[in-house]
Length: 178
Image 1 (cartoon, helix red, strand yellow):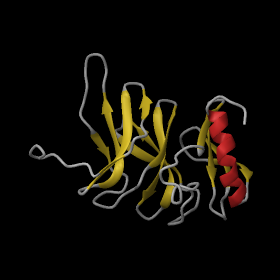
Image 2 (cartoon, helix red, strand yellow):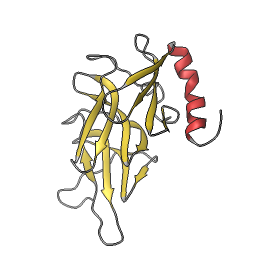
Image 3 (tube, one colour):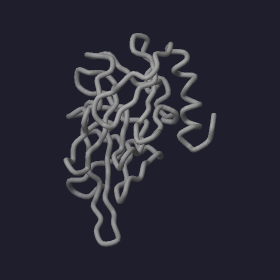
Image 4 (cartoon, one colour):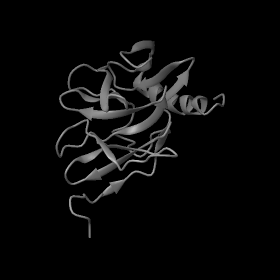
């Protein structure tokens, strides 16, 4: 049984990202769908799980691809009316922010997250203080960069080459040359 007021977790993603004293993960509940959660733990203080509800209500934002950049987690998520795009969570504001709506409107931009939900590798890498990320949707496929707000296209790619580039970006982001 569960304690009064608690929710049972139906799905818990094994992948987590650590940023400072914060740990982020993805879980699914009947009340909130699949969303991002975080907790804070320092040598003197810790908190319980906190919800980052990108798609409010029972709808799921299905966050994936957690990546720590400049002390904030970045992730792909589906938002109301904008499709699947890149978000960042600002712990100071206790809020998730859309980085950029690359594929404007309800179209999605994320690389393979609909097809490879459990494979969050290879979509982002930090290079010289900028976050590089891949998009594979046909009208906007390419390598993009951001420093946290907005995005700039660095190189247009075909959707197939963007998917193929995932392995190289993953290898590069782990400190190895692809």
